Image (cartoon, rainbow, N blue to C red; front, side, top):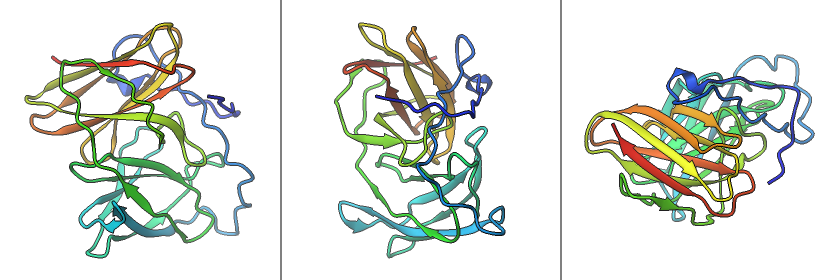
Length: 239
């Protein structure tokens, strides 16, 4: 997969929670021909839309606006009976990417997306049923066509990724390893149950390793962006 490098290079060392060496995130590709910011573009705008699942409105989904530096929660709301949501004071994170938004609900894959805000805007989300993987058992890539956005990858509609969900039976540290033969680089994110970004990391020539403190009984999503690998394996462990 081609990655368009931009002049903005973020540096994240897994937010102090990753395991192993420090990580340099993959630069975010710029939005193609972004509109010129209008007067007052630094002011927040209103983002609204509808969240669906299998074509039907999804009630009670959490729509969250995330901080660009660490993926923490800035503001959130829930969809109403018609699946509609509305967030105010939404701003672009930079001239290269829009606002970072996630939509989550138990039993569904969390959707993450950058939304360009040149004024009040609308963005609809369609959630897919989550596919659980067993803790401790290797899970192989399934060549699913999904897109993800995170701290190190985004722009436009995000990067092609694969998603895995694991429910932890006890509190501790969730360890995730992504590997392939031959060795390829990966970007990866573990999302918290509320749709915020727990940890982000990237590898170059070594397996990608991520570690996140987790709570008993909750489901955590693993997003993997492979750069060149057609097949890879994800292993999980609870420490």
